[in-house]
Image (cartoon, rainbow, N blue to C red; front, side, top):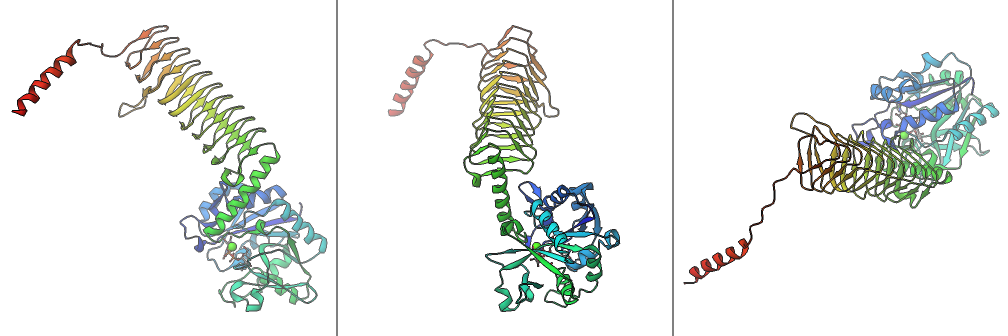
Length: 466
Ligand code: UD1
Ligand code: CA
């Protein structure tokens, strides 16, 4: 969209959130509220994007990076004052400026585009995006004249009883003729209940000067939710969650219960994958086709191959191959790399380790800092003893090896290709290829011992009876 500019308001502290984290940085489905807004603006392609920062300016800039220019609002004197801070960057330009609040993460790019088109088509000096709210409490109310034309906006705290009955609300998104915007901003005063310079006052001023102002009503109120507190934050999360779930279902993913499945904005999921309830997919996780994830699994920044199953397990920053089975109750920690047809069963923890094709650790193991080849069988209770109290060491288990149950592999150590480790062994020396290693004390059978003990004990008991 040419000759179009965007201003995003993100300088407020967000007192009502009662948080150490700046309001616009609170995540919704894994992405900061203000980043949702900016990404949508970037997708509609405005010529310039200016974010007004104040509270937590550095953190906001760190989050958004170079996707936006920044203007600093030192003191938070209100939304009109905030927009005015962009004057040195945008004031001299001809065109249309869209203003969006950084705390309205649900407004879709399509809606912004429709607003701009409506604004340009009607030739208005200002167009306000409005919605009909079931409960308009807290929002600015749109006051229309008898002819239905928009006259002005009135804030909740300044509204009369009668005005408070109005259900058409200001969503906090507007389009302006850029020059008219900066001229009019200087005429806004702070003579109101909050002592703030209100951006929507620009509309009333333009109207009183005889300019054409317009409103564009969105059908979907939920899209316009302004997040001022944690209660609305959870509502925004819910709306976004269902929106994302719908998108994935339309693309061929089965989600048993979208209300109880949590998918981050950046996740990618292949068709015919089944998401069971309690599944949490975070960060830039990529899941292949035909997988079954859940119930109750958490996947963070991981890659899962086609046909893989993850049942009641946690996978963090790891790569999992195709047709691999994980869980129930497995913990795959960062930098792990599991191949195809691998099996990781209950109560197995894997950390910074690789397992080759067809390898198995089916029960109760710790595999840390290990390089495991293909077709290796790791018996129940095996532990790679990777830490000597100061440093971590690597355990190498080569292809086709068989590690018997309850073995300790004291790293650094290598189990050679095709070798066997006898159950219960503690292995501290490298094992060559195709070798059976037994590292445990020899068993001693003391025949008749139990009978002798019993006789001895019963004699003692007799002594006591006397
Ligand atoms: C604002 C609107 C209200 C609308 C609602 C929609 C005004 C006066 N009111 O109210 O009509 O219904 O949004 O959600 O505009 N900000 C700054 N600098 C400031 C003050 C605010 O950058 O000095 C930013 C905040 O960070 C926030 C946005 O502007 O992202 C909106 O401010 P907020 O205080 O949340 O306004 P509301 O009371 O929600
Ligand atoms: Ca708000």
